[in-house]
Amino acid sequence: MLKYVLVGLVLFLGSNSVMAESPRSELFDMDAIRDASTLDVKVIQDWHLVEGRFPTRQKQMTILVGEMWPGQPYRVAVSLVVPADGKANGFLLTGGNTPERLQEDAKIFALEQLLLSGGVGLVQTVVQEPRAMGLRELGTKSNDRFYRSLNAHDKVQYWAWPATMMRAITAAYSEKDHFGVGKVAMSGGSKNGATPSMAIIHDDRMTAVHASVSPIWDSPLRMCDTKAWEELKAEHGEFRHPFLGGHYGPIYNHLALEAGRSWEDLQKLARQISDDVFITRNIESLREREVDMLFHPGTHDFVAYDLSWGGEHHPTIPIYLRANSGHGKKSQHPAAENDQRNRDAFLLEHFFADVEPLLTSPTVKHQVEGDSLNISVRFAPDSGEESGRIWWINNRALDGSPDYLKVDIPEENWAEMQYDQKQGVWQVTVPLDPEATRIDFFTNHRKKIRYQDQEYSTYLSSPYTRVVLKK
Image (cartoon, rainbow, N blue to C red):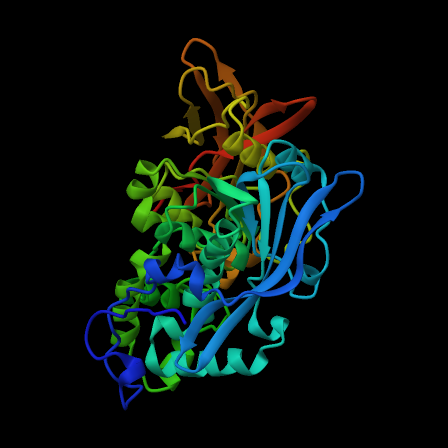
């Protein structure tokens, strides 16, 4: 049974009242997370050879993550895959699987073959809504408890999902005949982008994260900043959306208020928990650990709904923006990249020394001159970027608003950039609409990465930039 410590005032689980003050957040007892003796492994299929075009050795099992609250265990399925003829050193960890799929032998696709051929293993577990795991009652009870307690340990997304990924590492490393200690990279989208982004803050065994359509930064809306919410209401009126304005996923503000909590309680929780969940709150320590990161937040995503704020305050965090992309977006911009293979190249470069590095975030400058906006983007010397392309949108609605999602970048609002060899910058001039009060833009740049006999087109964006033209 995992122990966990919540430091601060009265511990909710030992309190007679779920309305007690929200405790300070210290979600994970890392000694307990790393304790293999508490995994309570139940083997589905023990280690066995899986024949085929690419033979592997595999094991399927379930493990105990811990207790969400006393008497409520949380178990997940885990599948382990290593090369057929040797031990894996490090692995790719993913959570976008189902319990049913992980009872069977894993299929090995092209990227996985390259990783396994280089001695990198695969660890697959389940980060899904409880109802998708056959745990509907637990999910309902978890949410009900959280809305009343505002105790982060009660909520699946704050405790159970990150703990799942960390415990899966413990399970893999307990198989000492099959896994040696090495790099641990994670990739996924939505909840499987948010969860590894949170887990990597706490677990220094993790070394890389590639995350799509998931939160990155602690913007004012996420922090329940009163001024930000009043500004949004003044421009867009009252609205409810299951995600817009949420702290780190679905918005729980209204339900917590209806359960008797106050706006001040929500602000207090945001202050207490944000160091535990946001990349931006931990960027320096992650860089000291030399963690590799790449994010695909989407330009029109209801989870990563705060591009403008993020671009202004955290321009060095590496992102790729596919124009008009996000959860549920079916029609993307006609000029958006169709050959992007960022994830594959990112993972290959992370695990293998003979892969050229991807691009790092450039700097961007702009200047209004008459009826034009002049823009220049500069990469570090000898970065190897091969192209530049810009997109823009006029009078875009505020971050976190319904219109932020609804109104696409117009099909005609893009252009190729030109490289100025003498100055070492990518340049473009964008015509300004005389009716525009603000203009948002970003640029994308390609670099081809080669590994063995394959070529991978990678793209990195400049910081998303909003220029105010008229007050």
